[in-house]
Amino acid sequence: MRVSLERPMYYRRDGTAILGSVLDPRGTLEWARLFERNLDYRRVAESTLPNGIRVSTVWLGLDHSFSAVGPPVIFESMAFAAELSHRDETKMTFLDGKEHVLAAFDYHEELDCDRYSTEAQALAGHMEMCEKWSPGCRSLPASTEGV
Image (tube, rainbow, N blue to C red):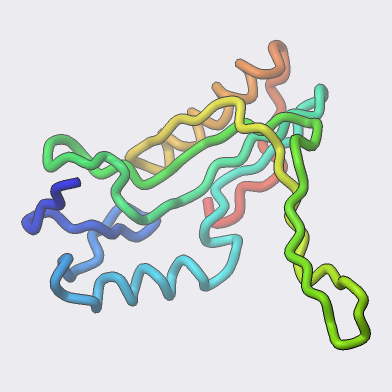
């Protein structure tokens, strides 16, 4: 992958560029602080549809356009299946000889994904994805913190 040194890689939720470059770690550090700040900063909207499908729209902050042409793509909506597809567990055997679960992660099949340049586009795309996966469902997202 070729990375452009002329275009910022990271953007705040309001779309303003985070200064820095591939060669300057300050931009990466600011993005990381914003990203880990709290879930409400990353989450744009989240909806559980009547059929159990979950639609989640988040701020990525990292330009996913992978091009120096056009606006940066920093938001993403995804739809996840209601049913659990698999569970991963990290286990370790301790001195007592028993196996203990250290961490467990539940995974749901990814059904759909769209990406956007602005928060307004992301919210509109969230509602479109809700309608796509549950026709007739026009309810507001369950969560729209920071909007």
